[in-house]
Amino acid sequence: MSGRFITFEGGEGAGKTTQIKALTHFLSKMAKETLCTREPGGTPMAEALRDLVTLGPTGRWSALEEMLIMYTARSELVRTIIKPKLEEGVWVLSDRFADSTTVYQGFAGGVPLDRIRQLHSIVLGEFAPDLTIILDLPPDEGLRRVNSRAQTISRFEKHPAEFYQKVRNGYLQIANENPDRCAVVDAGLPIGQISEQICQLVADKFNNELTL
Image 1 (cartoon, one colour):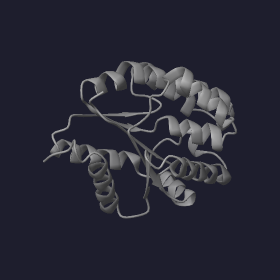
Image 2: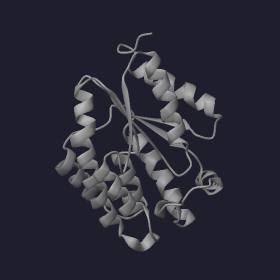
Image 3: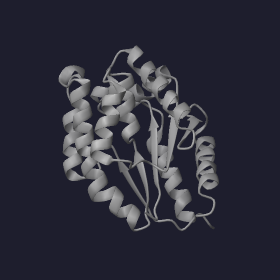
């Protein structure tokens, strides 16, 4: 595939949407066509599944059931959007991907990690991002940001405090175990500084593919 697949991960309030916009602008200056998507979602069917899994009380689904819904949406998104776009040479930027399932349903939700790996292999095989940006932020600060927004609070923003600490620890463990794919960025820094760091990370990793 001639395109590149870059995912953004992090806990609640980490600023993924803002940084995806900044990287999209940077890549446009490098003459790269981009597509931005999100998980769960990105297609009409996957968006319907997003509503199914994000709305309602926290106990609506078990972590195992959440995992199955997430991978159903992910399978359709990859099959119908992500892979075709990558084959066309488009750079795809996604707000969350498989690491979110590993962290939220695995590390924090209690689904055995080997079960998640097995499902990933069944559904997506060896397909994985070329680069994952993990925006790291203390959970209390992230939740403070979320609660200050005039938006609907999702099921995943209503858990006890210890859940979000497990989420953060899970992301940091994934980054430690996958240093060639993952880069951790301090999401507590000023927005512009975060954007500069991310753009530099992308430029360094794909330096032979990016030209002014």
